Length: 221
Image (cartoon, rainbow, N blue to C red):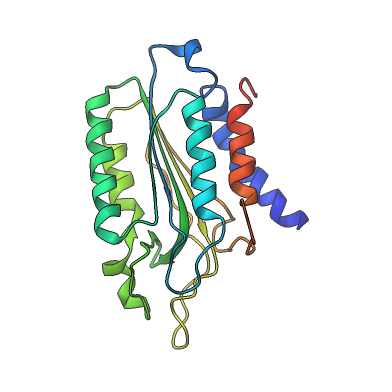
């Protein structure tokens, strides 16, 4: 457990540096727009997740208190998930250069060939070749966000979990892949690259609780 907590702290510190001071009460920075997309996927037919819907709700409430205009959703299928991202990118494009955009995804995530994927609840994945067509490739949308002249982009993937979809055959790599963020973008994981977070019974995950607590604490160095 000690090692796990160290991972949480190390991965959350960059968010504190960029966000916690900036995510103080909105009245402190009236000119700064703040928008967020928060998704919690837990109702998977195979191995549902106990905490992700609650975690997304906690993060959404915390961001709203910090002055964010939050779009929240839970248990999204593939089509709805992709539409939610497209709508959010359009919202970011219309929001202007003084905007901080944050995306928080809780659910199952996997890596394949150095790319990270977020899995919709209706995915039908039984082998590695299903992943690119059934799951959402994070980099496709992160690059679109990075191309918009915003003040900052924050992408939080609370999705490094032991995946139950691919059994037997050639196993895929564990956890999520370390990726190089684009300028003005921060990418954080709930576990160190290549590892998975421990299974949690609920009602909340420790990563979401720690993240919410740090966002509430403004003015941290």
